[in-house]
Image (cartoon, rainbow, N blue to C red; front, side, top):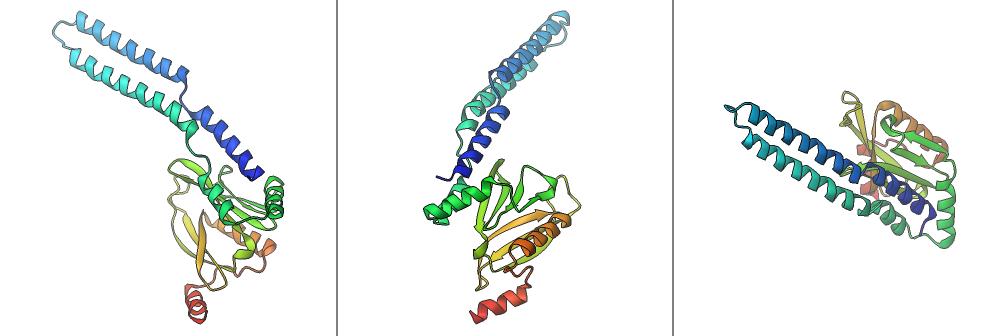
Length: 226
């Protein structure tokens, strides 16, 4: 198994442990709801004309539900699969032992280029001598798509409005990765023109064989002639 992947899975596991609600959170939540219930009951006794019992019941049910959700999340979050797509990509690249060693060596060293997509340092685009790893979030979990640079013959992109909350008025660039026949085999999205330019400059510098931003018209022509 990839040493780099093991390290990334370990980091993700530690992050999940820190973010998952622990017994301390559950106890504090229970105490808060008990205090609210007590205050409502006292208010009910001091104000005979006001019936707080239905509200007490609602607050009690809400408290129990939140505590149950916290308890379930504290148990399930650390046990969720870690970086399943990264593991799948590494498997599909069919590394020989020498290539796997090369991959780990490059990914665990300082990258040739590191693009912080939409200024998020936790979701980088990593470019090494032979590989590119694209970090993204899906269903609340971080994962990677990993590509061999030599497999990429050209890129083609479309732009649209960014869905990132940090850049709601900016542009998003949806990039297709194509082989020499113009067939798409992968892709990524970049929020912000600045990072799109940085990405293109990095590929131009470190993977000069890749034709960048080929028009769809040209791609269709390549596909037709292949």
